[in-house]
Length: 224
Image (cartoon, rainbow, N blue to C red; front, side, top):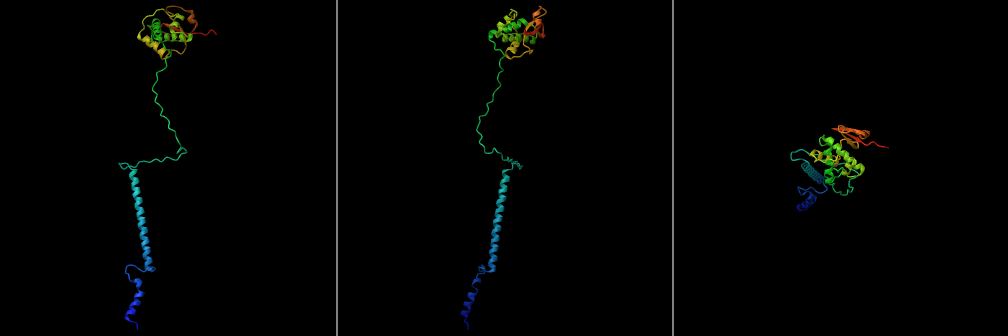
């Protein structure tokens, strides 16, 4: 007969793996279930952590692309082009060029300007501004055609020898023609006369262009 001591030892060997009430024996069905549950808990914890990170990043993005008033700003993404990454050399900015003074049609010295103004005053001082410009235009065309100074042109074309002091309007008419290149007619007028004072077959043999005030103006008729 077994003694009480032998039975206790045999029972102890048979139930050694089940002495712990909290941990099942490794390899048993209960241990396998416990391991699966632990793995499932770890997976669920990782998934919850990942979801929280995604929500946190989404909240940061909304905060970045949202104005203080709460309205979302549009972010334009440019499509890729062939020139992306190409080197563009620095070029200096174009300098702003201010308005330039218009070129003077015919530069006059003070002495030449005085002669022209006095001749225009003598020939058309009492006429309209256009009439004064026409006389100045004749003097300019004669000087350019002959390649001489205006003071010589008035002699070659037999202008009056009277030289009265010019008015401001006469000075302005001379400046309009010689300085700014303004003209009353496009034709290169050279001759004029006052038919109320004289008759001139020569003038009438030329190309009549315009009559202004008491003067008739003519362009030169070609002899070729």
